[in-house]
Every structure is written in C-alpha cells, then in structure tokens.
Picture 1 (tube, rainbow, N blue to C red):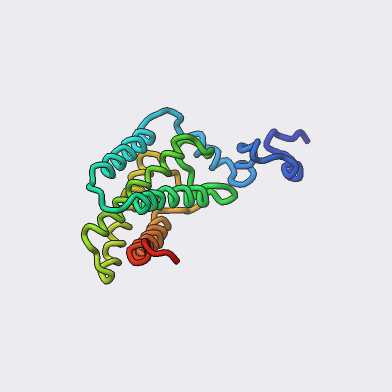
Picture 2: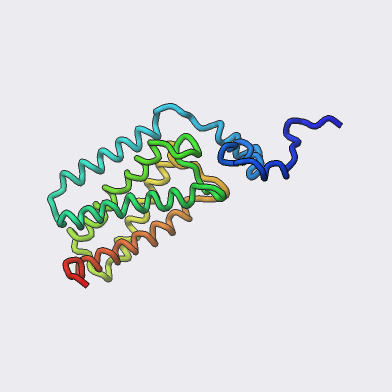
Length: 202
C-alpha cells in the first residue's frame, strides 16, 4: 500500500535534531492544530510590536520623570526585578517541551521578545516606588498586592488581545494571576529586607 507523506516512521524521528525541524516536532507533539495556529501568526510590524514599544517608552519616561527616591544600587535592583521576572517566566513557560504560550509572531526568540521582557523593568520600579511613596504598612500589603495583581492581569489580557501572548495547552489568565500574587509578594518581602538591611554588611 502506498504511504502518504504524513505516514512516517516515528522511530526515525528520534534520530532527527528536532530543533532543526520545528514543523515535524509540532506535528509529532501537537498535531495539525498547533501548526495551524502558527500559520495564523502575522510577521509584520503592527499592533503587538507597537504595544511593546509604546509601553516600554512610557515606562522609561515615567521612571525618569519621577523624583529620585532610592539610591542608584536600589534603583537598579528594582529595575532588574521586573526584567528578570519577564525573562524567567517567559523562558520557562513558553519553551519546549511544554510551551504553555508563544510570544509575539513566532515560537522562536526574536528581538521584540527581548523588548517585551525588558518592558517589565519600569513597571517593577513603579511598584516599589509607589509602595514606598504611599508608605504602605505591612498589614495593608496584601491589599496593595491584590490591586497590582489585578492590574497586571488586565495588562496581560490586553497583551493577549493585541497578539503578544498566544496561550496553548489549556493555559489561561488565572494561572498568570496566581503567578502575579507570588511574585508581588516576593517583591514586598524584598522591599522590607532592603529597607532594614540594605545598608548593612553581613
């Protein structure tokens, strides 16, 4: 019986470098549905790229416009917190073999993916800035965290609409909301640690 071009020997795939055969890998792992979703991505500089650029510029301008509140080392650390979280989760949850979501226009890491991660840096700084400026007391920290978690989830929802995130394998915004709660709680803890011990040497 003649074999179709889709009827291939699975054993042979094991000898292939799947990094060089993304189409075969998606066919083997996710079937035609994942392939079709890849085809639907656009590859033009449009709404999702503009959203990243504008958000990054607004965030940078906000950081520069706000009166100085922390020393340079602390400011740098607060900026790094956002960028690190962006890189950590986007390159943990969006990579093979699981790949719960795809960023921007391709499953491959691109320049705009880098900027989409750096985009978190100014907003993490603003999180710490407002927490210090408003002088949030520890007993009110949970409310502050919840407000920011909802704001973050709203921004992510907008990011999904404009095409920055493409959820896969049942991933949804509720999982991200839990992640935001954990990350923001860690940031509040970090703030208090630096507040009490930042200028001391151990």
